Image (cartoon, rainbow, N blue to C red; front, side, top):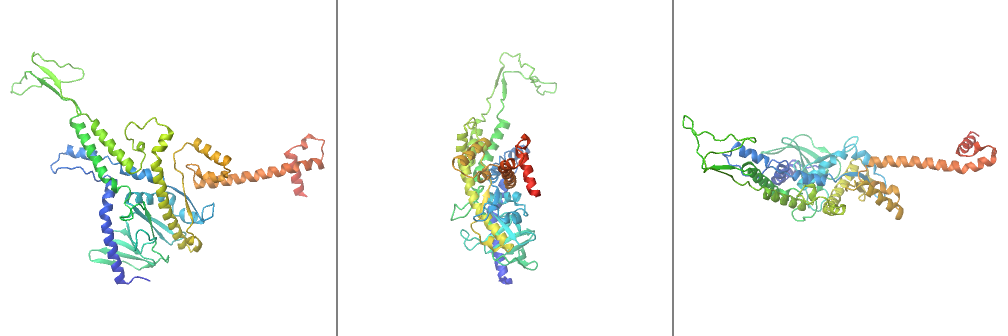
Length: 469
């Protein structure tokens, strides 16, 4: 049932308030990832040199936290329950929406903010899927933890223009200080549910909801910037050795101004005629403490975000280690990837089911057992993989074709091409076997005196002769 003007106004106000409340959490995360916030105190009368050091002290590792996880997530297929080939939705929905590339935006936004959204609307020739950041989309749920579909959603279009979605229609509105105003005719989408699918970074916190990877790391990122600033200050003003001299008479010029006694250079020797003159130097500031402090902060980020420490280039102790040790260092990261594949996989299945509903495919809409196929991005050598898969095929009788998709880096296009090539080879093998089986009969019925009749060519000729008759 379409919303009345009064109900639409009430919903718009609630959505706008929720959007403003979320902005207080999301905007600082966005600024931190972009490196716009340093967290270093800058006095109002600070010199330009001071400000330059503050700008150089932005040691931002937060984008790497997002990339390390997002780059390991890549959907390669979608299969209906009980099927071994991709669902028709893969070619009719996924590929036309260019989601091979655009899927990364959904994962990155969810990892960064805790949630992201995909809007699914009917379209031609395929439903239109639009990835949305939570800074652009706000959804209201009756129960945010358990509900599959939101009650209402607000999507920012441009300026003060928005679109409100419910389970039947899309309402274009303008939001201003005076309140929401309908900005055109409402359009029926006919999906029966609010056409917004939520991607959640994780379901670990059942009280506050998902927070993403970045928000818990904001304090330590500010600490990193402060440590880097202190390092740069020490490096700028205290890391070089200052010289001193005592007991030396300073000559003056005709105007009574002191004359610089030394013209220092790498090819000159300093000397003084006064017997009481002494030279010396102050010790330089040791930068090791600053570097160690920064490494400790990076190790904390590595542990909290489950990133292998060697990916953050932390310290000098992670070198010349065995493959088993490297695998142990990456164990937590692989577990984190698996958890996100489970969460995001459910959302992708929900998104493709809704796309099926938009196409009128009731069977695919009702298929809640379909599965997403994730690409194996585990870093392993091809030799190790080939050896392991070969043993599975030989020792456990696993069909070799079933193991193709477990080869790291292989794409769905590769699998389809290999299957076509294997089918051609199977046909040719069957033909050769058939011709070889026919060869003895040809020899018995034909001229057995000539050696030229012995072999597959004679069999092929006989087969062609039978085909002519």
